[in-house]
Image (cartoon, rainbow, N blue to C red):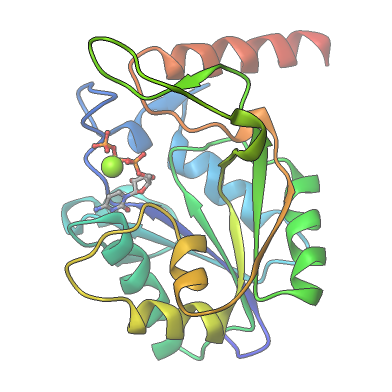
Length: 222
Ligand code: CTP
Ligand code: MG
């Protein structure tokens, strides 16, 4: 890697407990190709991206294509391991951090994110919340005004030096479910671009079957 590169970092070291199945969800097949490989190919085929690094559990390193590095106990630790590996091998100018559990990455999203990075240290795809939101419980609680909320997807694009510094400064013992909040904690602004439902995460049993149906439908219209 080189200090002027744009690198894609795919995190694929989770256990996929909510999705279940014989292998962790990122290795389950969508159209005969593992989810993580869908993501890797999308980034490898983008003209603005010079290299792709995948973070996997040590036992799975043989099952991914391309360069890989060992993950950690949490998503945050897995990302940190990946960022440190990039830093140790020449660094990068920009990094796109992505969940392997989101196999479909429209090229336009990457284009939008990288364009937004011209004026910010971090950019993320977001979508509005469609459902009514309430405080949870056996008896539901108060409504939360959804017009003030957004749901955040990946890939998330960052200035490499800024996100590396933010991860290094993050308090040990605290967790974060994405990297935008880690960059914000370090005092930087994160801007949003319009997300895409195709980026929704495979999380529960059945999500993969829906993605499969969508893929088959898209092949029929081609
Ligand atoms: N991830 C990772 N290392 C971890 C935990 C998660 O690289 N220690 C990755 C997952 O592989 C996934 C992404 O982070 O691509 C988003 O996490 P999530 O959807 O929560 O995946 P899992 O943690 O694997 O699933 P679950 O929480 O249901 O066990
Ligand atoms: Mg998880």
